[in-house]
Image 1 (cartoon, helix red, strand yellow):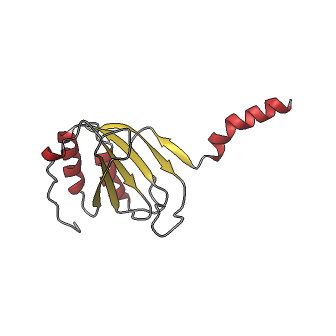
Image 2 (cartoon, rainbow, N blue to C red; image 1 turned 120 degrees about the vertical axis):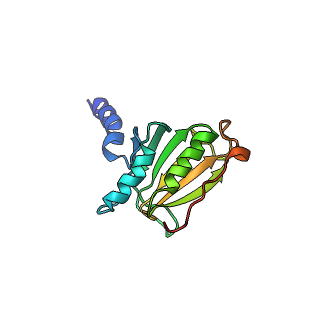
Length: 149
């Protein structure tokens, strides 16, 4: 009897007490009361079917230090240089949304990753995977955008 109860709790606990959840379709856990117009603008690009979404994760952790992310969402995409170019161009056209670019050799499952955090709710960070065989940085032309628009 005790073994059965322990086995049941062990299999049920991750679903009940999880502090992260998979994101099977592109979506963001926005802060309560966040501007719906800005949320819709971001999601219009992130959910666009022309961009190959691989999966993601939302964590329900508050910021532990002033520089840590609060309730971050990580969304992984795969694609080639042209697709990334189109993705970045679409993001830079969003009024009131700031875009940060990072470049990393850390293993991710795709060509780029979008990171959103309650710490900077009007910012999307796009991390470009330098190990991706689909992205040619020499052919990537960063779109022109006007800061603060």
